[in-house]
Amino acid sequence: MEWGQVLPDSLVLEIFLRLPHEAVLRASLTCRQWLAVSRDEFLWRALFYSYYRIPRSVPRHPAAVSWYREFKRLFDCIPCVEVQTLREHSDQVLHLAFSHRGHRFSSCSKDCTVKLWDTERPDGNISLVHSCSMRQFNWGYTQFSQFNADDSLLLVSGVYLGPQNTSAGEIAVISLENYTLLSRVRNKPYDVFGCWLNETHLISGNLHWIGNMTSCSVLWLNKAFQDIESENVNVVKRLFKIQNINASTIRTVMVAHCRRHDNPDLVLDYEAQSQAQRQKGPQKQHQPLLFDLGSEEEDEEEEKEEESRKEGRCHSFNTARLPQPIISNFEHVIQSRKNIGPKELAIETKVAQIMSRVHTKAPDSSLVEPSESSDGEDKTYLLFTTGSLTYSPHQIGIKRIKPDQMTTSGPVLGAERSSYEFFDSLDHVIDIHGHIIGMGLSPDHRYLYVNSRAWPAGCVISDPMSPPPIAEEIDLHVIDLKSLREERRSLRAHRAFTPNDECFFIFLDVSRDFVASGAEDKHGYIWDRHYNICLARLAHNDVVNSVAFSPADQELLLSASDDSTIKVWRSPRMVRLAQAPARPSKPRKLLSSWLCRNRNSSSVGTVNGKP
Image (cartoon, rainbow, N blue to C red; front, side, top):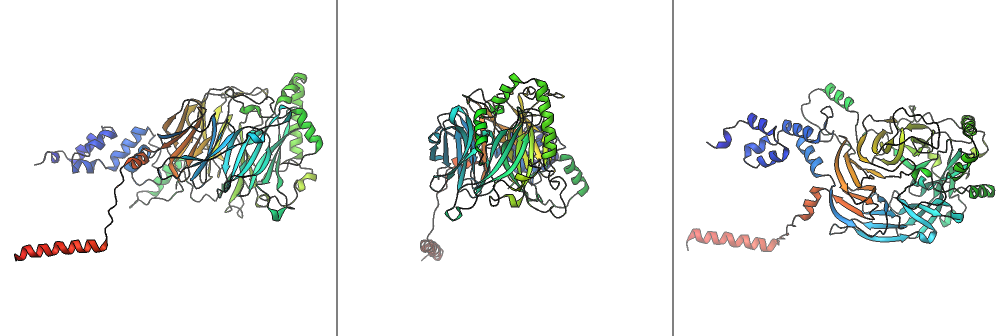
Protein backbone atom coordinates (compact mmCIF):
# COMPACT_ATOMS: atom_id res chain seq x y z
CA MET A 1 0.00 0.00 0.00
CA GLU A 2 1.31 3.41 -0.90
CA TRP A 3 1.70 5.77 2.05
CA GLY A 4 -0.19 8.60 0.26
CA GLN A 5 -3.41 6.54 0.28
CA VAL A 6 -3.49 6.35 4.08
CA LEU A 7 -4.85 9.90 4.39
CA PRO A 8 -8.37 10.43 3.07
CA ASP A 9 -9.09 13.45 0.90
CA SER A 10 -11.12 15.16 3.63
CA LEU A 11 -8.18 15.03 6.06
CA VAL A 12 -5.72 16.30 3.45
CA LEU A 13 -8.11 19.17 2.74
CA GLU A 14 -8.30 20.06 6.44
CA ILE A 15 -4.51 20.16 6.59
CA PHE A 16 -4.28 22.32 3.47
CA LEU A 17 -6.80 24.77 4.92
CA ARG A 18 -4.30 25.51 7.70
CA LEU A 19 -1.36 26.12 5.39
CA PRO A 20 -0.35 29.24 3.43
CA HIS A 21 -0.88 29.09 -0.30
CA GLU A 22 2.86 28.63 -1.01
CA ALA A 23 2.94 25.49 1.13
CA VAL A 24 -0.19 24.16 -0.56
CA LEU A 25 1.38 24.58 -3.99
CA ARG A 26 4.57 22.81 -2.89
CA ALA A 27 2.61 19.98 -1.30
CA SER A 28 0.61 19.51 -4.50
CA LEU A 29 3.81 18.25 -6.17
CA THR A 30 3.98 15.27 -3.82
CA CYS A 31 1.46 12.95 -5.47
CA ARG A 32 -1.58 12.92 -7.69
CA GLN A 33 -3.99 12.73 -4.78
CA TRP A 34 -2.59 15.85 -3.13
CA LEU A 35 -2.51 17.61 -6.47
CA ALA A 36 -6.22 16.92 -6.95
CA VAL A 37 -7.06 18.09 -3.41
CA SER A 38 -4.94 21.23 -3.86
CA ARG A 39 -7.26 22.36 -6.67
CA ASP A 40 -10.37 22.17 -4.51
CA GLU A 41 -12.58 25.26 -4.94
CA PHE A 42 -13.54 25.40 -1.26
CA LEU A 43 -9.82 25.43 -0.35
CA TRP A 44 -8.94 28.31 -2.67
CA ARG A 45 -11.99 30.29 -1.65
CA ALA A 46 -10.76 30.20 1.94
CA LEU A 47 -7.16 30.97 0.92
CA PHE A 48 -8.36 33.85 -1.26
CA TYR A 49 -10.28 35.67 1.47
CA SER A 50 -7.64 35.10 4.13
CA TYR A 51 -4.60 36.06 2.04
CA TYR A 52 -6.06 39.22 0.44
CA ARG A 53 -8.02 40.14 3.58
CA ILE A 54 -11.23 40.71 1.68
CA PRO A 55 -14.56 40.74 3.55
CA ARG A 56 -16.50 37.59 2.79
CA SER A 57 -19.52 39.72 1.89
CA VAL A 58 -17.66 40.69 -1.29
CA PRO A 59 -18.51 38.11 -3.97
CA ARG A 60 -16.11 36.68 -6.50
CA HIS A 61 -15.46 38.69 -9.64
CA PRO A 62 -18.40 38.09 -12.04
CA ALA A 63 -16.06 37.08 -14.86
CA ALA A 64 -13.96 34.67 -12.78
CA VAL A 65 -14.35 30.96 -13.52
CA SER A 66 -12.67 29.56 -10.39
CA TRP A 67 -11.24 30.68 -7.05
CA TYR A 68 -7.85 29.20 -7.92
CA ARG A 69 -7.58 31.20 -11.14
CA GLU A 70 -8.81 34.34 -9.40
CA PHE A 71 -6.14 33.95 -6.71
CA LYS A 72 -3.54 33.46 -9.43
CA ARG A 73 -4.80 36.51 -11.37
CA LEU A 74 -4.32 38.86 -8.44
CA PHE A 75 -0.98 37.28 -7.55
CA ASP A 76 0.59 36.85 -10.96
CA CYS A 77 -0.93 39.40 -13.35
CA ILE A 78 -0.18 42.67 -11.53
CA PRO A 79 2.40 44.92 -13.28
CA CYS A 80 4.69 45.23 -10.27
CA VAL A 81 8.10 44.08 -11.60
CA GLU A 82 10.38 46.87 -12.80
CA VAL A 83 11.86 45.88 -16.16
CA GLN A 84 13.19 49.18 -17.57
CA THR A 85 13.98 52.75 -16.50
CA LEU A 86 13.84 55.54 -19.08
CA ARG A 87 16.14 58.48 -18.29
CA GLU A 88 15.85 60.65 -21.40
CA HIS A 89 14.08 63.50 -19.56
CA SER A 90 16.32 66.02 -17.79
CA ASP A 91 13.72 67.28 -15.29
CA GLN A 92 10.59 66.18 -13.44
CA VAL A 93 8.25 64.03 -15.54
CA LEU A 94 4.68 65.24 -15.01
CA HIS A 95 2.39 63.17 -17.22
CA LEU A 96 2.14 59.99 -19.31
CA ALA A 97 -0.46 59.07 -21.94
CA PHE A 98 -0.85 55.95 -24.09
CA SER A 99 -2.23 55.88 -27.61
CA HIS A 100 -5.51 54.02 -27.99
CA ARG A 101 -3.76 51.14 -29.78
CA GLY A 102 -1.10 51.00 -27.08
CA HIS A 103 1.73 51.04 -29.61
CA ARG A 104 3.06 54.40 -28.41
CA PHE A 105 2.95 56.71 -25.43
CA SER A 106 3.85 60.33 -24.76
CA SER A 107 5.51 61.99 -21.78
CA CYS A 108 5.51 65.62 -20.59
CA SER A 109 8.14 67.15 -18.38
CA LYS A 110 9.50 70.23 -16.67
CA ASP A 111 12.30 70.14 -19.25
CA CYS A 112 9.66 71.62 -21.63
CA THR A 113 9.68 68.67 -24.03
CA VAL A 114 7.06 66.19 -25.11
CA LYS A 115 8.53 62.83 -26.05
CA LEU A 116 7.05 59.93 -28.01
CA TRP A 117 7.99 56.33 -27.25
CA ASP A 118 7.59 53.02 -29.08
CA THR A 119 6.31 49.98 -27.14
CA GLU A 120 6.36 47.38 -29.96
CA ARG A 121 10.05 46.62 -30.37
CA PRO A 122 10.84 42.93 -30.99
CA ASP A 123 13.09 42.75 -27.91
CA GLY A 124 10.29 44.02 -25.66
CA ASN A 125 12.14 47.19 -24.62
CA ILE A 126 10.69 50.68 -24.98
CA SER A 127 12.60 53.17 -27.13
CA LEU A 128 12.41 56.91 -27.81
CA VAL A 129 10.88 57.78 -31.20
CA HIS A 130 10.65 61.58 -31.20
CA SER A 131 11.29 64.54 -28.89
CA CYS A 132 9.89 68.05 -29.37
CA SER A 133 10.90 71.09 -27.31
CA MET A 134 8.22 73.74 -26.76
CA ARG A 135 10.61 76.45 -25.56
CA GLN A 136 10.63 77.93 -29.05
CA PHE A 137 7.00 78.89 -28.42
CA ASN A 138 7.85 80.53 -25.08
CA TRP A 139 6.48 77.70 -22.97
CA GLY A 140 7.64 77.18 -19.40
CA TYR A 141 7.00 73.41 -19.43
CA THR A 142 4.67 70.74 -20.80
CA GLN A 143 2.17 69.27 -18.35
CA PHE A 144 -0.38 67.05 -20.14
CA SER A 145 -0.90 65.21 -23.43
CA GLN A 146 -3.63 63.12 -25.05
CA PHE A 147 -3.96 61.15 -28.30
CA ASN A 148 -7.06 61.67 -30.41
CA ALA A 149 -9.38 58.76 -31.17
CA ASP A 150 -7.53 57.47 -34.25
CA ASP A 151 -4.03 58.16 -32.84
CA SER A 152 -3.21 60.55 -35.68
CA LEU A 153 -2.93 63.74 -33.58
CA LEU A 154 -1.44 64.55 -30.20
CA LEU A 155 -2.79 67.28 -27.92
CA VAL A 156 -0.07 68.82 -25.73
CA SER A 157 -0.92 71.22 -22.90
CA GLY A 158 1.58 73.45 -21.17
CA VAL A 159 2.33 76.71 -19.41
CA TYR A 160 2.85 79.66 -21.72
CA LEU A 161 4.99 82.52 -20.42
CA GLY A 162 3.40 85.62 -21.88
CA PRO A 163 4.33 89.33 -21.86
CA GLN A 164 4.71 91.33 -18.64
CA ASN A 165 5.65 88.14 -16.80
CA THR A 166 2.12 86.77 -17.06
CA SER A 167 1.61 83.02 -17.24
CA ALA A 168 -1.32 81.31 -18.91
CA GLY A 169 -1.87 78.01 -20.63
CA GLU A 170 -1.60 76.95 -24.23
CA ILE A 171 -2.55 73.84 -26.16
CA ALA A 172 -0.58 72.61 -29.17
CA VAL A 173 -1.74 70.00 -31.69
CA ILE A 174 1.00 67.88 -33.28
CA SER A 175 0.58 65.62 -36.29
CA LEU A 176 1.91 62.13 -35.60
CA GLU A 177 2.45 61.48 -39.28
CA ASN A 178 5.30 63.97 -39.72
CA TYR A 179 5.53 65.60 -36.23
CA THR A 180 4.53 69.04 -37.51
CA LEU A 181 2.73 71.61 -35.37
CA LEU A 182 -0.81 72.10 -36.69
CA SER A 183 -2.27 74.68 -34.29
CA ARG A 184 -1.90 76.47 -30.97
CA VAL A 185 -4.84 77.44 -28.73
CA ARG A 186 -5.00 79.69 -25.68
CA ASN A 187 -5.96 77.91 -22.45
CA LYS A 188 -6.74 79.83 -19.24
CA PRO A 189 -6.13 78.87 -16.51
CA TYR A 190 -3.57 76.35 -17.63
CA ASP A 191 -4.78 73.61 -15.27
CA VAL A 192 -7.89 73.33 -17.43
CA PHE A 193 -5.44 71.08 -19.36
CA GLY A 194 -7.78 70.63 -22.34
CA CYS A 195 -9.04 67.43 -23.97
CA TRP A 196 -10.31 65.91 -27.22
CA LEU A 197 -14.05 65.91 -27.89
CA ASN A 198 -13.70 63.81 -31.04
CA GLU A 199 -11.06 63.04 -33.66
CA THR A 200 -10.80 66.60 -34.97
CA HIS A 201 -12.07 68.93 -32.23
CA LEU A 202 -10.65 69.79 -28.81
CA ILE A 203 -11.90 71.74 -25.77
CA SER A 204 -9.99 74.62 -24.19
CA GLY A 205 -10.81 77.18 -21.50
CA ASN A 206 -10.67 80.89 -20.79
CA LEU A 207 -11.26 82.91 -17.63
CA HIS A 208 -12.61 86.45 -17.13
CA TRP A 209 -12.84 88.18 -13.76
CA ILE A 210 -16.12 90.09 -13.38
CA GLY A 211 -15.66 91.05 -9.75
CA ASN A 212 -13.26 90.80 -6.85
CA MET A 213 -14.04 87.10 -6.28
CA THR A 214 -16.46 86.41 -9.12
CA SER A 215 -15.37 85.18 -12.53
CA CYS A 216 -16.67 83.58 -15.69
CA SER A 217 -15.20 80.42 -17.22
CA VAL A 218 -15.69 80.04 -20.96
CA LEU A 219 -15.16 76.63 -22.57
CA TRP A 220 -14.33 76.68 -26.26
CA LEU A 221 -14.60 74.06 -28.99
CA ASN A 222 -11.63 74.31 -31.36
CA LYS A 223 -10.90 72.52 -34.60
CA ALA A 224 -7.45 70.98 -34.46
CA PHE A 225 -6.55 72.23 -37.94
CA GLN A 226 -8.06 74.19 -40.80
CA ASP A 227 -8.57 72.48 -44.13
CA ILE A 228 -7.85 74.34 -47.35
CA GLU A 229 -11.39 73.56 -48.48
CA SER A 230 -12.90 75.13 -45.33
CA GLU A 231 -11.15 78.47 -45.06
CA ASN A 232 -14.48 80.23 -44.61
CA VAL A 233 -15.77 77.80 -41.96
CA ASN A 234 -15.41 78.54 -38.26
CA VAL A 235 -12.58 76.78 -36.46
CA VAL A 236 -13.67 77.91 -32.98
CA LYS A 237 -17.03 78.07 -31.21
CA ARG A 238 -18.10 78.88 -27.69
CA LEU A 239 -19.37 75.75 -25.96
CA PHE A 240 -20.35 76.89 -22.44
CA LYS A 241 -20.14 80.03 -20.33
CA ILE A 242 -20.31 79.35 -16.59
CA GLN A 243 -20.23 81.76 -13.67
CA ASN A 244 -17.84 81.13 -10.75
CA ILE A 245 -18.16 82.51 -7.23
CA ASN A 246 -15.87 82.64 -4.19
CA ALA A 247 -12.72 82.73 -6.36
CA SER A 248 -13.39 79.25 -7.78
CA THR A 249 -12.71 78.36 -11.42
CA ILE A 250 -13.27 75.44 -13.77
CA ARG A 251 -10.28 73.13 -14.14
CA THR A 252 -9.31 69.67 -15.39
CA VAL A 253 -11.83 69.16 -18.18
CA MET A 254 -12.41 65.69 -19.62
CA VAL A 255 -15.01 64.12 -21.89
CA ALA A 256 -16.95 60.94 -21.07
CA HIS A 257 -18.66 59.15 -23.95
CA CYS A 258 -21.27 57.25 -21.97
CA ARG A 259 -22.93 54.37 -23.74
CA ARG A 260 -26.12 52.74 -22.60
CA HIS A 261 -24.19 50.74 -20.00
CA ASP A 262 -26.03 47.50 -20.72
CA ASN A 263 -22.86 45.57 -19.80
CA PRO A 264 -20.88 47.54 -17.22
CA ASP A 265 -17.26 46.55 -16.70
CA LEU A 266 -17.61 46.68 -12.93
CA VAL A 267 -20.26 46.10 -10.28
CA LEU A 268 -19.48 47.77 -6.96
CA ASP A 269 -22.74 47.33 -5.06
CA TYR A 270 -21.78 44.22 -3.12
CA GLU A 271 -25.05 43.98 -1.17
CA ALA A 272 -27.01 44.03 -4.43
CA GLN A 273 -24.72 41.37 -5.87
CA SER A 274 -25.16 39.09 -2.87
CA GLN A 275 -28.92 39.59 -2.90
CA ALA A 276 -29.09 38.85 -6.61
CA GLN A 277 -27.10 35.67 -6.14
CA ARG A 278 -29.44 34.54 -3.35
CA GLN A 279 -32.47 35.22 -5.53
CA LYS A 280 -31.01 33.20 -8.40
CA GLY A 281 -30.54 30.21 -6.12
CA PRO A 282 -28.29 27.26 -6.94
CA GLN A 283 -27.24 26.97 -10.54
CA LYS A 284 -26.64 23.70 -12.30
CA GLN A 285 -23.71 24.94 -14.33
CA HIS A 286 -21.60 28.04 -14.05
CA GLN A 287 -21.95 30.34 -17.04
CA PRO A 288 -19.24 33.03 -16.96
CA LEU A 289 -20.52 36.44 -17.97
CA LEU A 290 -18.73 38.52 -20.58
CA PHE A 291 -17.86 41.93 -19.19
CA ASP A 292 -15.93 44.80 -20.67
CA LEU A 293 -13.28 44.10 -18.04
CA GLY A 294 -11.76 43.19 -21.74
CA SER A 295 -10.21 81.13 -28.21
CA GLU A 296 -12.42 83.29 -27.85
CA GLU A 297 -11.96 86.40 -30.10
CA GLU A 298 -12.03 88.96 -27.32
CA ASP A 299 -12.65 92.69 -27.50
CA GLU A 300 -9.70 95.01 -27.05
CA GLU A 301 -11.19 96.26 -23.79
CA GLU A 302 -11.26 92.73 -22.40
CA GLU A 303 -7.66 92.21 -23.47
CA LYS A 304 -6.55 95.36 -21.67
CA GLU A 305 -8.55 94.40 -18.61
CA GLU A 306 -6.96 90.97 -18.49
CA GLU A 307 -3.48 92.38 -18.90
CA SER A 308 -4.10 94.76 -16.02
CA ARG A 309 -5.23 91.90 -13.85
CA LYS A 310 -2.19 89.85 -14.89
CA GLU A 311 -3.93 86.53 -14.89
CA GLY A 312 -1.77 83.44 -14.73
CA ARG A 313 -1.75 80.12 -13.10
CA CYS A 314 -4.54 78.98 -10.78
CA HIS A 315 -3.46 79.18 -7.17
CA SER A 316 -4.79 75.78 -6.15
CA PHE A 317 -2.29 73.79 -8.16
CA ASN A 318 0.81 75.50 -6.90
CA THR A 319 3.67 73.22 -6.08
CA ALA A 320 6.33 74.26 -3.61
CA ARG A 321 8.72 71.73 -5.11
CA LEU A 322 8.98 73.71 -8.37
CA PRO A 323 9.75 77.31 -9.38
CA GLN A 324 6.37 79.00 -9.67
CA PRO A 325 5.11 81.52 -12.21
CA ILE A 326 5.59 85.07 -11.05
CA ILE A 327 1.94 86.13 -11.37
CA SER A 328 -1.01 84.13 -10.05
CA ASN A 329 -4.56 84.06 -11.37
CA PHE A 330 -5.65 85.30 -7.97
CA GLU A 331 -3.24 88.20 -7.84
CA HIS A 332 -6.04 90.70 -8.25
CA VAL A 333 -8.17 88.80 -5.69
CA ILE A 334 -5.38 89.01 -3.13
CA GLN A 335 -4.88 92.70 -3.95
CA SER A 336 -8.61 93.37 -3.58
CA ARG A 337 -8.66 91.78 -0.14
CA LYS A 338 -6.16 94.38 1.02
CA ASN A 339 -8.49 97.21 0.03
CA ILE A 340 -11.94 95.69 0.52
CA GLY A 341 -13.34 94.37 3.79
CA PRO A 342 -14.99 90.98 4.32
CA LYS A 343 -18.46 92.54 4.42
CA GLU A 344 -18.07 93.97 0.92
CA LEU A 345 -16.80 90.62 -0.35
CA ALA A 346 -19.76 88.84 1.26
CA ILE A 347 -22.15 91.31 -0.41
CA GLU A 348 -20.47 90.63 -3.76
CA THR A 349 -20.98 86.91 -3.32
CA LYS A 350 -24.69 87.37 -2.57
CA VAL A 351 -25.12 89.66 -5.56
CA ALA A 352 -23.31 87.13 -7.77
CA GLN A 353 -25.59 84.35 -6.55
CA ILE A 354 -28.68 86.45 -7.31
CA MET A 355 -27.32 87.32 -10.75
CA SER A 356 -26.57 83.66 -11.36
CA ARG A 357 -30.15 82.64 -10.57
CA VAL A 358 -31.55 85.32 -12.85
CA HIS A 359 -29.19 85.01 -15.80
CA THR A 360 -28.48 81.25 -15.85
CA LYS A 361 -30.32 78.85 -18.08
CA ALA A 362 -32.09 75.90 -16.48
CA PRO A 363 -30.11 72.63 -16.26
CA ASP A 364 -30.76 69.69 -18.54
CA SER A 365 -33.34 67.61 -16.69
CA SER A 366 -32.73 64.59 -18.94
CA LEU A 367 -29.35 64.04 -17.27
CA VAL A 368 -30.84 63.05 -13.91
CA GLU A 369 -34.33 62.07 -15.07
CA PRO A 370 -33.91 60.50 -18.52
CA SER A 371 -36.98 60.36 -20.68
CA GLU A 372 -38.16 57.22 -22.44
CA SER A 373 -37.06 58.58 -25.80
CA SER A 374 -33.52 59.36 -24.67
CA ASP A 375 -33.01 56.45 -22.29
CA GLY A 376 -31.28 54.32 -24.91
CA GLU A 377 -29.14 57.10 -26.37
CA ASP A 378 -25.40 57.36 -26.13
CA LYS A 379 -24.53 60.55 -24.26
CA THR A 380 -21.45 62.74 -24.09
CA TYR A 381 -20.65 64.50 -20.82
CA LEU A 382 -18.14 67.22 -20.06
CA LEU A 383 -16.59 66.60 -16.63
CA PHE A 384 -14.50 69.12 -14.71
CA THR A 385 -13.51 70.22 -11.22
CA THR A 386 -15.04 73.34 -9.74
CA GLY A 387 -16.15 74.79 -6.40
CA SER A 388 -18.69 77.00 -4.71
CA LEU A 389 -17.37 77.54 -1.18
CA THR A 390 -13.70 78.25 -1.78
CA TYR A 391 -11.09 78.51 -4.53
CA SER A 392 -9.82 74.95 -3.99
CA PRO A 393 -11.60 72.47 -6.30
CA HIS A 394 -13.98 70.38 -4.23
CA GLN A 395 -16.80 69.58 -6.65
CA ILE A 396 -17.24 67.57 -9.86
CA GLY A 397 -19.28 69.47 -12.43
CA ILE A 398 -21.14 67.58 -15.15
CA LYS A 399 -22.51 69.17 -18.31
CA ARG A 400 -24.05 67.26 -21.20
CA ILE A 401 -22.75 68.04 -24.70
CA LYS A 402 -25.52 67.63 -27.25
CA PRO A 403 -24.90 66.37 -30.80
CA ASP A 404 -25.44 69.78 -32.40
CA GLN A 405 -22.73 71.24 -30.14
CA MET A 406 -19.99 68.90 -31.36
CA THR A 407 -19.05 71.00 -34.39
CA THR A 408 -17.74 74.51 -34.86
CA SER A 409 -20.26 75.29 -37.60
CA GLY A 410 -22.79 78.00 -36.79
CA PRO A 411 -22.36 81.30 -34.90
CA VAL A 412 -19.06 81.59 -33.05
CA LEU A 413 -20.68 83.03 -29.93
CA GLY A 414 -24.02 81.25 -30.21
CA ALA A 415 -27.55 82.64 -30.16
CA GLU A 416 -27.41 83.06 -26.38
CA ARG A 417 -25.07 86.04 -26.86
CA SER A 418 -28.13 88.34 -27.02
CA SER A 419 -30.24 86.25 -24.67
CA TYR A 420 -31.23 87.38 -21.21
CA GLU A 421 -29.95 84.06 -19.84
CA PHE A 422 -26.31 84.22 -20.86
CA PHE A 423 -24.81 81.81 -18.26
CA ASP A 424 -24.98 78.04 -18.67
CA SER A 425 -25.97 75.99 -15.64
CA LEU A 426 -24.35 72.77 -14.53
CA ASP A 427 -26.51 69.73 -15.14
CA HIS A 428 -25.20 67.99 -12.03
CA VAL A 429 -22.70 68.65 -9.23
CA ILE A 430 -21.07 66.10 -6.92
CA ASP A 431 -19.39 67.52 -3.80
CA ILE A 432 -16.31 65.54 -2.70
CA HIS A 433 -15.81 67.49 0.59
CA GLY A 434 -12.09 67.79 0.03
CA HIS A 435 -9.41 69.09 -2.32
CA ILE A 436 -9.56 67.22 -5.66
CA ILE A 437 -6.09 66.39 -6.98
CA GLY A 438 -6.75 63.88 -9.76
CA MET A 439 -9.40 62.27 -12.00
CA GLY A 440 -9.53 59.31 -14.38
CA LEU A 441 -12.18 57.44 -16.38
CA SER A 442 -12.66 53.68 -16.65
CA PRO A 443 -12.15 52.24 -20.17
CA ASP A 444 -15.91 52.04 -20.77
CA HIS A 445 -16.43 55.58 -19.35
CA ARG A 446 -18.95 54.21 -16.84
CA TYR A 447 -16.97 55.10 -13.70
CA LEU A 448 -15.04 58.22 -12.72
CA TYR A 449 -12.20 57.79 -10.23
CA VAL A 450 -11.27 60.87 -8.20
CA ASN A 451 -8.20 61.50 -6.03
CA SER A 452 -8.95 63.90 -3.16
CA ARG A 453 -7.59 64.98 0.20
CA ALA A 454 -10.45 65.25 2.65
CA TRP A 455 -11.45 68.22 4.77
CA PRO A 456 -12.14 67.70 8.49
CA ALA A 457 -15.61 66.36 9.18
CA GLY A 458 -18.13 69.08 9.98
CA CYS A 459 -15.83 71.95 8.98
CA VAL A 460 -17.38 75.32 8.09
CA ILE A 461 -15.80 77.60 5.48
CA SER A 462 -16.16 81.26 6.44
CA ASP A 463 -13.44 82.70 4.19
CA PRO A 464 -13.26 81.50 0.55
CA MET A 465 -9.54 82.29 0.47
CA SER A 466 -8.88 80.18 3.58
CA PRO A 467 -10.03 76.64 2.81
CA PRO A 468 -9.96 73.99 5.55
CA PRO A 469 -6.79 71.98 6.19
CA ILE A 470 -6.55 68.81 4.12
CA ALA A 471 -5.68 65.28 5.16
CA GLU A 472 -2.39 63.61 4.30
CA GLU A 473 -4.24 60.47 3.23
CA ILE A 474 -5.50 60.49 -0.36
CA ASP A 475 -8.97 59.07 -0.88
CA LEU A 476 -9.74 57.51 -4.25
CA HIS A 477 -13.48 57.96 -4.81
CA VAL A 478 -15.52 55.99 -7.35
CA ILE A 479 -18.45 57.75 -9.04
CA ASP A 480 -20.98 55.87 -11.17
CA LEU A 481 -21.78 58.12 -14.14
CA LYS A 482 -25.01 56.22 -14.78
CA SER A 483 -26.55 56.81 -11.38
CA LEU A 484 -24.48 59.98 -10.73
CA ARG A 485 -23.71 58.91 -7.21
CA GLU A 486 -20.55 58.09 -5.34
CA GLU A 487 -20.01 54.48 -4.38
CA ARG A 488 -19.80 53.74 -0.67
CA ARG A 489 -16.27 52.35 -0.56
CA SER A 490 -13.32 54.58 -1.44
CA LEU A 491 -9.77 53.31 -1.91
CA ARG A 492 -6.98 54.44 0.37
CA ALA A 493 -3.27 53.67 0.71
CA HIS A 494 -1.40 56.58 -0.90
CA ARG A 495 -0.42 59.80 0.85
CA ALA A 496 0.43 63.45 0.14
CA PHE A 497 2.09 66.01 2.38
CA THR A 498 1.92 69.45 0.76
CA PRO A 499 -0.43 72.02 2.38
CA ASN A 500 -3.69 73.19 0.86
CA ASP A 501 -2.29 76.10 -1.15
CA GLU A 502 0.62 74.04 -2.54
CA CYS A 503 -0.86 70.63 -3.40
CA PHE A 504 -0.62 69.62 -7.04
CA PHE A 505 -2.29 67.30 -9.51
CA ILE A 506 -1.54 63.58 -9.29
CA PHE A 507 -2.68 61.70 -12.39
CA LEU A 508 -4.30 58.29 -12.08
CA ASP A 509 -5.31 55.70 -14.65
CA VAL A 510 -7.88 52.91 -14.88
CA SER A 511 -7.64 49.64 -16.80
CA ARG A 512 -10.12 46.80 -17.25
CA ASP A 513 -9.41 45.27 -13.82
CA PHE A 514 -7.12 47.70 -12.00
CA VAL A 515 -6.76 51.32 -11.00
CA ALA A 516 -3.38 52.96 -10.34
CA SER A 517 -2.28 56.30 -8.95
CA GLY A 518 0.83 58.23 -8.07
CA ALA A 519 1.50 59.76 -4.66
CA GLU A 520 3.79 62.15 -2.84
CA ASP A 521 5.23 59.33 -0.71
CA LYS A 522 7.56 58.27 -3.56
CA HIS A 523 5.39 55.34 -4.63
CA GLY A 524 2.79 54.43 -7.19
CA TYR A 525 -0.09 52.19 -6.13
CA ILE A 526 -2.26 49.56 -7.83
CA TRP A 527 -5.70 48.46 -6.63
CA ASP A 528 -8.10 45.82 -7.89
CA ARG A 529 -11.28 47.55 -9.04
CA HIS A 530 -13.66 44.81 -7.98
CA TYR A 531 -12.28 43.87 -4.57
CA ASN A 532 -11.06 47.38 -3.61
CA ILE A 533 -7.73 46.11 -2.28
CA CYS A 534 -4.25 47.53 -2.77
CA LEU A 535 -2.11 44.98 -4.61
CA ALA A 536 1.26 46.65 -5.22
CA ARG A 537 3.50 49.61 -4.40
CA LEU A 538 5.86 50.89 -7.09
CA ALA A 539 8.97 52.57 -5.70
CA HIS A 540 10.60 55.75 -7.03
CA ASN A 541 13.13 58.16 -5.55
CA ASP A 542 10.72 61.10 -5.50
CA VAL A 543 7.08 62.07 -5.96
CA VAL A 544 5.18 59.91 -8.48
CA ASN A 545 3.16 62.31 -10.64
CA SER A 546 1.50 60.03 -13.17
CA VAL A 547 0.81 56.39 -14.02
CA ALA A 548 -0.56 54.86 -17.23
CA PHE A 549 -1.78 51.37 -18.19
CA SER A 550 -1.34 50.15 -21.72
CA PRO A 551 -4.83 49.88 -23.27
CA ALA A 552 -3.58 46.88 -25.24
CA ASP A 553 -2.18 45.03 -22.21
CA GLN A 554 -3.06 45.92 -18.62
CA GLU A 555 -0.05 43.92 -17.44
CA LEU A 556 2.13 46.80 -18.70
CA LEU A 557 2.22 49.96 -16.56
CA LEU A 558 4.29 53.14 -16.67
CA SER A 559 5.06 55.53 -13.82
CA ALA A 560 6.55 59.05 -14.01
CA SER A 561 8.29 60.82 -11.17
CA ASP A 562 10.03 63.97 -9.98
CA ASP A 563 13.22 61.91 -10.07
CA SER A 564 13.17 62.58 -13.86
CA THR A 565 12.61 58.94 -14.76
CA ILE A 566 9.88 56.84 -16.32
CA LYS A 567 9.73 53.29 -15.00
CA VAL A 568 8.30 50.38 -16.94
CA TRP A 569 6.48 47.69 -14.92
CA ARG A 570 5.32 44.28 -16.09
CA SER A 571 3.55 41.42 -14.37
CA PRO A 572 5.49 38.43 -12.99
CA ARG A 573 3.73 36.26 -15.57
CA MET A 574 4.92 38.39 -18.48
CA VAL A 575 8.46 38.56 -17.06
CA ARG A 576 8.63 34.76 -16.88
CA LEU A 577 7.37 34.44 -20.44
CA ALA A 578 9.97 36.94 -21.66
CA GLN A 579 12.80 35.16 -19.84
CA ALA A 580 11.82 31.66 -20.90
CA PRO A 581 14.13 30.30 -23.63
CA ALA A 582 12.46 30.18 -26.98
CA ARG A 583 11.82 26.69 -28.25
CA PRO A 584 13.71 26.23 -31.52
CA SER A 585 11.36 25.36 -34.29
CA LYS A 586 12.15 22.18 -36.23
CA PRO A 587 10.54 22.43 -39.63
CA ARG A 588 10.07 19.07 -41.23
CA LYS A 589 10.04 18.79 -44.98
CA LEU A 590 7.41 16.50 -46.42
CA LEU A 591 9.81 14.58 -48.71
CA SER A 592 12.54 13.98 -46.12
CA SER A 593 9.96 12.93 -43.53
CA TRP A 594 8.41 10.43 -45.95
CA LEU A 595 11.81 9.00 -46.93
CA CYS A 596 12.81 8.61 -43.29
CA ARG A 597 9.56 6.87 -42.42
CA ASN A 598 9.88 4.60 -45.48
CA ARG A 599 13.48 3.72 -44.63
CA ASN A 600 12.52 2.75 -41.08
CA SER A 601 9.69 0.53 -42.23
CA SER A 602 11.89 -1.27 -44.75
CA SER A 603 14.60 -1.93 -42.16
CA VAL A 604 12.05 -3.38 -39.78
CA GLY A 605 10.76 -5.68 -42.52
CA THR A 606 14.29 -6.85 -43.27
CA VAL A 607 14.94 -7.78 -39.65
CA ASN A 608 11.67 -9.65 -39.28
CA GLY A 609 12.21 -11.47 -42.59
CA LYS A 610 15.79 -12.44 -41.70
CA PRO A 611 17.12 -12.44 -45.27
